[in-house]
Image (cartoon, rainbow, N blue to C red; front, side):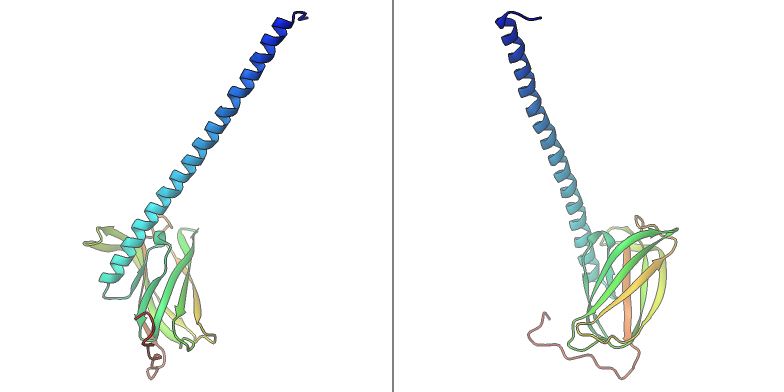
Amino acid sequence: MLKTPGIKLILASGLLTLTACSAPRTQVQETKEEVSALAQKMNRLNQQTVKLTQQNTLNAQSKQGVYLLPAAKAPAQLESQIGDLTLRLDNIIAYGTGTKATLTITGDSIRPLPAFSGEIVWGEIQGTIEDYREVNTHTRTISEAASVLVPSDIVIQLDMPDIAPAQLGFVRIHDIVPTDPDFKPAARSPFGKH
């Protein structure tokens, strides 16, 4: 047993020093983990920004429809024969040997969307934005009933076989036309976004 107060004091101060030293190491480790998490978030945001810029550039150059890049995680606008539309791609998941996703088409009119048909193409993009090509493409024709509500949301479940979510570079929607050939879209407001 320790009977001298000096040894007890030395042991107590040593224990106190060890306790004090362990606290900053825990804080340092927590700070390192927070910095690492923030760096990962910044990396994801940078990648998303690049894809959003690519999506906007593709759509500015497109002569046939509108592109949605899954990694951009952003909607796109389309002027179609049924009016101005906002399109969004969500819930992209692996399914068997392919991919499933939800395509939402929203009308910007004060009227419900009419019945319509259109084409959806998906695949990979290779090359640069200035000189790219669509590869491993697949096409699906859609035919949708008229909506009842305003604003109109049409939700389409896309089954895209033979392409994994990591390979899915784009979804392009084009040739959206009303089923009724006599349909006329609502006039654009002079105060709208156009």
